[in-house]
Image 1 (cartoon, rainbow, N blue to C red):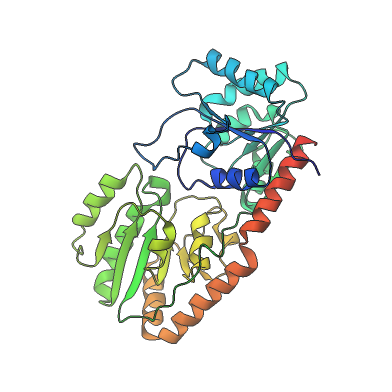
Image 2 (image 1 turned 90 degrees about the vertical axis):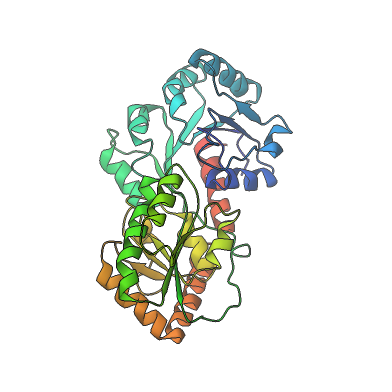
Length: 356
């Protein structure tokens, strides 16, 4: 199977983004990928300069340009590089240009990559006639596209994500006298860090052996910091801010809580399990496809305080049960969350859509 020449359209460049990790892995396999981006989100997220792409002329900065200038520059790239496949990955400012690129280059193939039902789905359905495929990472999203599309048989492709199981692995630690319960990730409304804070406030008086740790940054970071300070349990609820690597945060936890309001197929669940950390996750989006209740975690909304309290208290009182659950989480990751399988699946999907 030949590899397609790809142009990926991103809104901005964020360190740790799944899409960028996939592109780097495919480049290492010899796939020709150019990345174009529209803006700077460094005020809210840790940026990735993509110096490895820039050094070979495979990075295109479209920020601050008019729509016509963007159209011309991208069209030039499409022609000069003989691009087979355009990947639209949340670059909202470029959706309206897709029909015109397709008109100029009728043989060009375009795929939209959607991670959840909130982000750019309106733009997707407005311009869905341009897309030769819509790539999703969960059956939940695949069903959503099929239900919502005006097309009788939308070209949905499901590619399940994975993580590096060597990079994310358990550390040898013994259970301590206190149970470390944590939130790791973006401080933004959809991830619901405030829901974690409120859960911690309700749990703290019920069990004095629970500690709560928060790691990450994002647009709501300042508000989260203020909420933690005003929580009344600041001695047991700590906000650590940005961490260089999610693994470093996960290694400090016994249990991870994902209180998301909506989500796709969050990488964090896989990273946590790979580190031997079970999860308590809200049953939203594609999360139920990742968590087998009672095996590698539990599907519980963050508002169900009594159920979560009973679960955490049981794990604290029975360290052997906690150790067994941690081992089961790691085993689940080894069986289901392979990064290599994910990369192979993306490579195959891109080649199939591009008709190479």
